[in-house]
Image 1: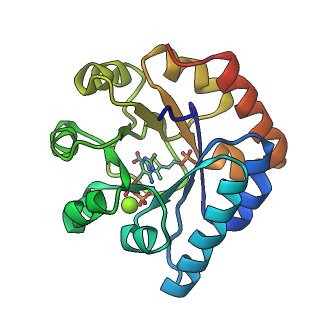
Image 2: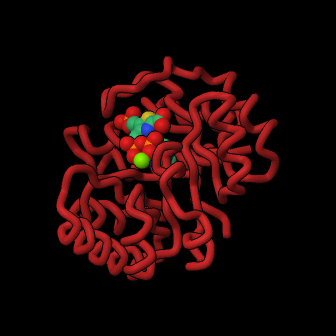
Image 3: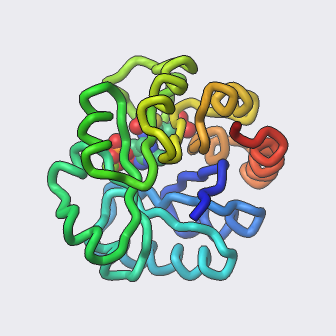
Length: 203
Ligand SMILES: Cc1ncc(COP(=O)(O)OP(=O)(O)O)c(N)n1
Ligand SMILES: Cc1nc(C(=O)O)sc1CCOP(=O)(O)O
Ligand SMILES: [Mg+2]
């Protein structure tokens, strides 16, 4: 399976309904601070929309719900990974993406044999408080050299204008939240991302 180079991350099925029909082929549902029934309903709705638009859905954090709802791809951070049952995830046939922020986390991630590795934050992000300083573009090349054929996702502070730089430095996929969801016109910005990620494909 080849993952699309443009990876949209949103916090609701409503965003997925709004933006996926515009040409998004890879989307993460990243929900925080909602009840389990609400998250389950969001996953179910997101899965149906993505199926209708041939978009790969990746569920953040909630791996048990993803299994129960018949999803096929999850994303976990290092803390999530420490408490997750990897055997159950693999037995259920789910693919797995993992976050990394430093060398030690990269070692831990590689040992779990994930289906992609994310490196962040490449630039400062306003979405969440990060313990790590921005990695910078050169770190992308260093990570790519370490992870072989696995897709490398760059995340953190990415914009349409920064897309070419992350691809030129070795990222396969660029993930984005606020450049789209905080934009005055999220639909237009999404179309710009779709076009730019096709014009400037990863090396
Ligand atoms: C593609 C991608 N990369 C990194 C993250 C961050 O995951 P994590 O460190 O678990 O933090 P939260 O997103 O759960 O706050 C991600 N979600 N997606
Ligand atoms: C959710 C997340 N994880 C990161 C990491 O480095 O692991 S950076 C990040 C925020 C990405 O949002 P934006 O595109 O608005 O900067
Ligand atoms: Mg997480």
